[in-house]
Image (cartoon, rainbow, N blue to C red; front, top):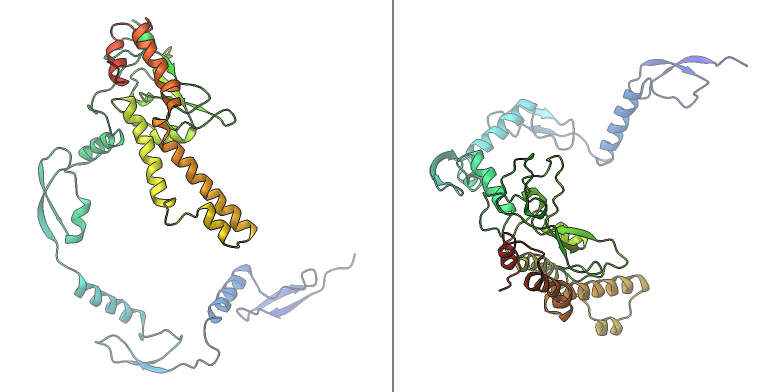
Length: 336
């Protein structure tokens, strides 16, 4: 093999000499850093007019009358210090003085003083981080009458002596509804995957994480979408849980699928549109009808047969629930 030929050449970027080799004949720069710097200047010079010529200007800072020659098209100051002083002068004239106000805490109601600019008082709502955490925790579980108390759930409402759990409200491991339909929106789950929704979220179980605990609580069949909407929100009745999902779908219809921005099949036939756009519009029309069916699901006769009929029968005519569980079940499902 022949040895590579070497010679000294000038760098295109910094004009310093470097050793060029025939093994890399296209090398024009002494280093990668020099190449990147040159490319940066090339990109910058693309936006500079070719006929631009430097002008002699007076510094734009009021307290500086020095004349200078431009080094770039947008240069207005003779040096960076003048630019910085000019910005401080502008910001200082627009800056308002701070104000001290007495604000009422949104959670505990105690008044507290805060000193800040007028526009920043909307961010101060709580007297301490503790009040902020307690308020956000309560807001996340909207719908519950008492946010501070936790619900202790054990299997069949019984507590193991080894766990030493204080049972405030024992709930049964009761699964209701039909596995082929979502209990909240009525979506068919024959071909799509389903999930199990905990009507009392597991984050409220005091025995979660306790070794040997297998509590499931009150559960129903649900699609993944409705389960994610409810998340760990807790409500007093099953009707409130269902209305939370229904209101979510109604807001989606009002925002994205109202009559003003949704085509009808008749309007689609009147206009000559290409195949791709037609399929997109037809899919949007189909999605709107699907959401309308989900909103109207509680008023469908299948809802009473699939969801509530079995629960009503079990509560009234069977011995599945003990004396401690029966009052809660009647209240949760609003059954007299």
